[in-house]
Image 1 (tube, one colour):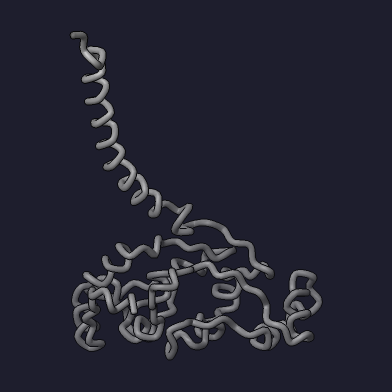
Image 2 (cartoon, rainbow, N blue to C red):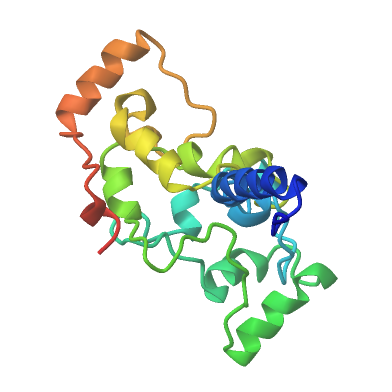
Amino acid sequence: MSAIFPPWSTAAFRWVLVLVAALLLAVPIALMGWVRTPYVTGELVPIEQPVPFDHRHHVVDDGIDCRYCHLTVERSPTAGLPSTEVCMGCHSQIWNDSPLLEPVRQSFFESRPIAWQRVHRLPDFVFFNHAIHVAKGIGCESCHGRVDRMPRILQVVPLTMGWCLECHRDPVSHLRPREAITAMGWRPESDAAALRAVLAKRYQVSPSTDCSSCHR
């Protein structure tokens, strides 16, 4: 009696099993890598804004503190965006006829907020509180980078769960005095490790790594 399947079918079936097993491993690994790419995280991806706001000019040239515009960062989960009235507090006198500021003037006279586009975006299932981080001595620069060097704000860190947990597991290395929270390029004048150990005790820094801390 002749065989039902040709001799090569056994080898072919084995290769199919190997291919299926490889795909079962490769697909999840590829997806895990893909979600960590800038294409997904938004890292270093430029975002067009309705007004070409240059942080270099406002922070370095004019010496404006972050909290002047992001005025709720010390008391609220959100840092807040400046109202048009805050912008016009200066620009009603300075560059008040610049074509670049026409959207600001239009927003002011029409009592309509400027439609700023979010740069640092977390998923809806993630809770982040700016105020607690600032109170514990985490500077703006730690998450937002050197905004004093940015003509246009970019997300310079991945903002992934792994990135957040890395800081929660070793927060001391990121600490600075509260009065230096908004200082760009801040470096301790003396022994950094000793200073940060003192700050960790003074600010009672002991962040949780429980899921419920961020996923509520």
